[in-house]
Length: 74
Image (tube, rainbow, N blue to C red; front, side, top):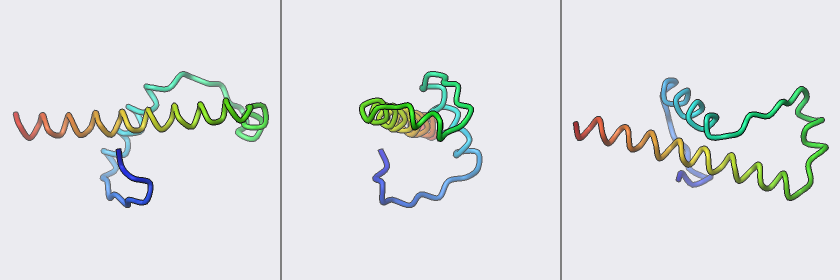
């Protein structure tokens, strides 16, 4: 996991891979307007969504690290 206060320079391809992997870990949600979506969430639901996103991003970072290590080893 990358600490919140860490600045990381990533290539466009890595950012795209990170986003795709993370988004694939999250359930689909139909959101027409972000304001409407957030207004209808309880605090607990909002906290759960934030944790789901954090977990998905952490998973994506770990996946890219493992793939990078596998390429370096292979």
